[in-house]
Image 1 (cartoon, rainbow, N blue to C red):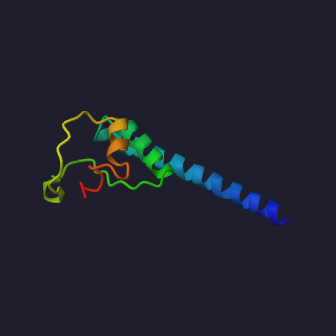
Image 2: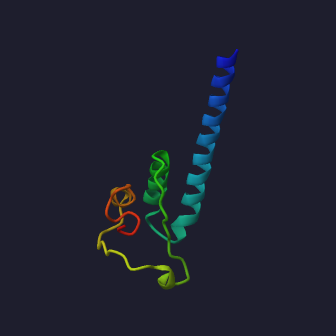
Image 3: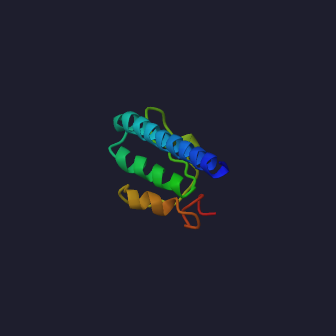
Length: 100
């Protein structure tokens, strides 16, 4: 009886996790296209980082300037891609966490 209850609970939480992921992806894919053509890459990246429990603070510029929030960082000079995002936010990467 205990094992069946545990399996049922696990199944329920797994379904809720999948629904949360679908809702979050839907939100990102509805909201971001007006501000960036890289919305699909951002959405996939966020999902993959979440799967690995890797944190990331990603900002998409809209109307207001971000200048006062930007700290001195390392210019990458690259086209934004899914692989680049995953590499930057991989723990231990020198660019992750502001080169600290």
